[in-house]
Length: 579
Image 1: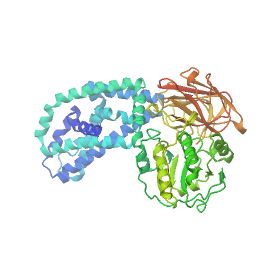
Image 2: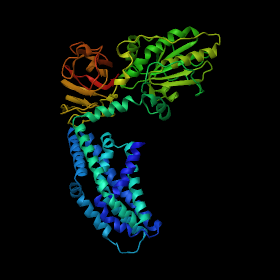
Image 3: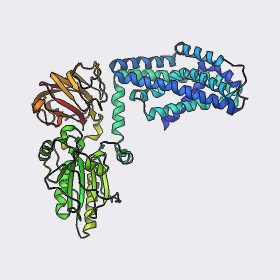
Image 4: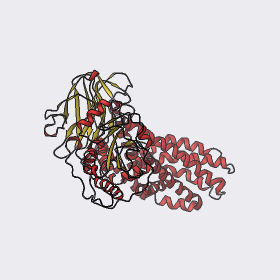
């Protein structure tokens, strides 16, 4: 909220910008005209033109930053010019002179004609044309962070706040007339010092961007501070995604309020069952059911499985049935043989329904991995939880539903698990890197100089410099919508990350041929920081389609550059995840 207020105030201050002063006497000369025919159309024209010009600048700034490393350098130059323009008004006047001249020509036309809605609208458009370049340095400062992150609702509302402030100051000028204008001219000296202070702030920001401090700090703040509200946002908006983890794996025991969320739709549509014959609604009547939607390459799912398995073991004699519904994210996760191997490797003993056609997923109207639905003995869904974490809370729901079924049941305490490898809970305070896909359908923060060539092999080279959460390809790769496949060996994937753990979803070469790889962290072997799928030298082999844990840092977690080199062709690279 404070940022929006500052943007609004910044918009108000633009009225005392030097290059706007020449047009204001003409505007004030119409202060005695009917507001609906003169003032209101003028404000509408000004706001519309201002929004278009400033919006184009904001969007272009975002495009420049996102384009590639060259674009980032150009953005740094642009923001440096903004800072210098704030410090030196003469430079600002020189840079904006072409637009000021154009605006002056427009507003000079028909200046003596009687007021009309059309002419007032044109006057407002010319004022907006003048106002946008005059506000440019201040606007650039306010929206620098938003421009670096790309156009968004946040940057849109910032822009609206800024233009609302500008429109407010002009409206006051129209209503108050020349006396307000004279007073504002007196305040010009203070405005100069404000602009100079903002100029210094912009130049400091340029230095921060040049050294990559902006990306690391902003991402750490944005990812580390939102975990407490993510669950509520997930419940409200329901995008298809991996559900974000809760802030901790356990919670203090509280009484969970249950509700009725609809009838249990059953498991019709499963293409195959593991660990059990097909289960129907009739067979499950009178049972308390926990349904766990998962997929075996999902790190959030893997970390919740030990708890789901423990619930099944602890309460199976009390009337609980746990059913895992395996709904795939990637094509290789539709293969029943791959799923069966994963179930064995993960030591899952409860029934698993293979939902490769998304039939059960759609029946539950589910959107997430993992997702847990809790169903009472009458066949009603009474509770759900999306994402990992809050295991004690979920177990308390199980106990409540079992006691509804059998009031004499003495179900107390919570399961204790001892996970290992990829199933260990993440270090939430140090996870500042998001899940990142390599296929072009969902690729973000790609930084190699070459544009991704879709569905055809081409050579790629390493980025000149990586900031946190940027990645690149090296070697000859064929990038599809879902993954990238190495055409000829050797080839590399490079990622600048901040997290304790780094995982990579990978698949073997043609006909399942193993692919050897070697990893480096900041250019050296991982040593004690290696994951379960590598050794201290960084060596490993991709033998099957699954998630590979490649890094688990033992010491301080800092921004690190990860590099994996594949020594054989054919490897398929899908997605990075972190913990």
